[in-house]
Image (cartoon, rainbow, N blue to C red; front, side, top):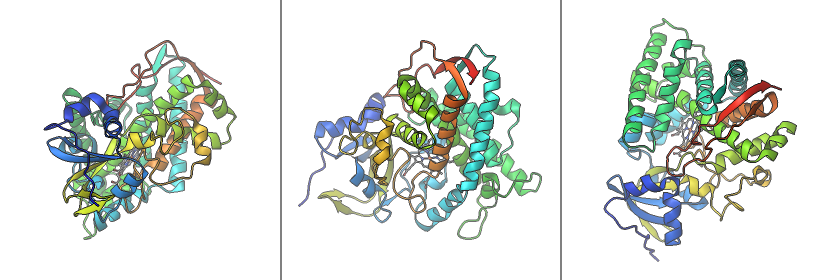
Length: 416
Ligand code: HEM
């Protein structure tokens, strides 16, 4: 039997995406009483799907490809042109291996130590500050961590510029107008900077330690045995340092959860590791970050009676899947303990994509993210105390990416 995919009316619904944000897909699924619907976005047809089964579908490499999936405006700001996100097949696997080779337990330990060190340094400064905006300060901390971990030299006087630029690329992804253009400018400036550093390494003027991302990206060879061209090497190195800065968003949401659910802070302080794992998972499930991810149909196929035609853009609902009542008890309740007996499906909990790391497009940095979040939130609860003055802590479900409006201001930072 063939089923008809429910279809949203309108020549183009991009404006509605901009006004409904993270709830764009969930709102329509509810309206159509369906796990699938069709719409038009950015001048093309798009099929939106949600849930665990939908995840398994989108990550089937035989049916989907990433080539041509990401809109140019996203490539020019967030991703960069020519990076791993848009690759397929053997070339993708080879490039992905380059990323995954950096994610060893030893390198995660290094990341942990660097993160603690930067929180220590920041605390010394904050003790003398009247108020601290945790989000922006967290981005600077993570920028330092990212550059040190990746082997990229960063002078104290350029910290603000580089941190702001890496943050602006992330902040641009759901934007039109000035925020989008700031993201593009930031990307151009960052690529120029990173290209220069890779050139220094390649010409022997700078020594990159072998275990770092700087070394890996500078000397990686593609399947034909060629070095990456300078631009691509820079895009991939930025694909390491930019998302480490992005972790500051989750850390800020973590601080928000500690504030709104004070019992979680007590449990973190008493914790020997298990609770912090569950807490961090719940932060990544509960708070909005990536709204959806997308791929193009590689060849015609039928799924649950629905026809998918070659070339169609398909979007997988990340936020909605993480909040689906079919998959999670009381999905809109913040409850870290739910991860105590979570079965660990690769497709029900997808804040950083689903499926497999090596052959699929699942986020290469998920372990880095979890490690940096745990380390940071343990520091915030076990090593320091602070006050949270009255402020607007609401976060928008329309602005993508979201963040508490006040950027989470803290005061009277003291060591425990
Ligand atoms: C891919 C989210 C942190 C590196 C992705 C994807 C998402 C995502 C949704 C796309 C999955 C897909 O399309 O199937 C996040 C979030 C992060 C984060 C919310 C939290 C801050 C990181 C970190 C790194 C990283 C820390 C590196 C150190 C990558 C790379 C890809 C990716 C290289 C592309 C993988 C591929 O195309 O094969 N991430 N990520 N991410 N992420 Fe992350």
